[in-house]
Image (cartoon, rainbow, N blue to C red; front, side, top):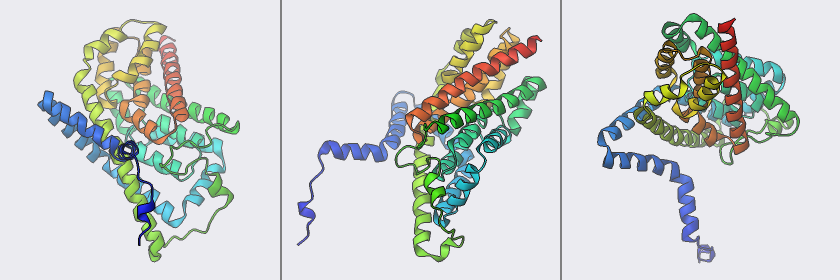
Length: 350
């Protein structure tokens, strides 16, 4: 006779909670599309097309990062990676910021890589440096910024990206030395922490993991779980971004960012969070605003703040990191964007 009949039955509330935890993000995306299909069918088609296209563009980064995470877990190479990154934290912060400012990752393309790095135990300080710098600038963005605005703005935005990364990485490094931010990842995302356990008790690396059934199974399980986790959050993020593009009039942003002085820089920093379109669409908007008399520093603050705290990037950070890490990410983004705008304004007036 089986003992399963003696197991306590879950209450309906507990069952619904478990169902929501597993499928809640997917259900939210479906609900958004269903509501759009009912009240605004053309927008439903456009949002679905936008999200699908964005996921396809992000797919190469997703595939590569998922493969790296699964490979590291199956071989045990994450021990070596974590140790390498914890050897010289200040150097890693500088390199992370530099790589973030020069790499071709957008605010969403970088998220799978961040998830893999944190899950492998790379220190949060180095990851934060890369995380903050990456959405702001990349090679193609540099060329487009130079064409739409000018070379001076493109160079200044690149320096702002690297400077914000270094600033954020150093702040996190100092907090970590005091014992804060020891476990940045949410429960169930991965055992990132600061890589302490992996470094304290390193295990031998099995490079030919496919020769062992257990390691092959671990590779597959990690790949599937990581794929589902990233896919559900990125899908929801892209759907919301499509609605922002459709429903937030450019005239509203223009009215809020006009004028000169310190106030527009502060306003642009705050408005850049909800009103940011995307890196490429925002450039013509800022160029037009500057042509109408908007302070260049306000344009810089808008681009930096919006790039780092855009809806897809912020939602992905919220999905991966614990609330204190998310709050620190937002605080570093806003303070760094305001500083970048202020410094650029002073430079243009010099």
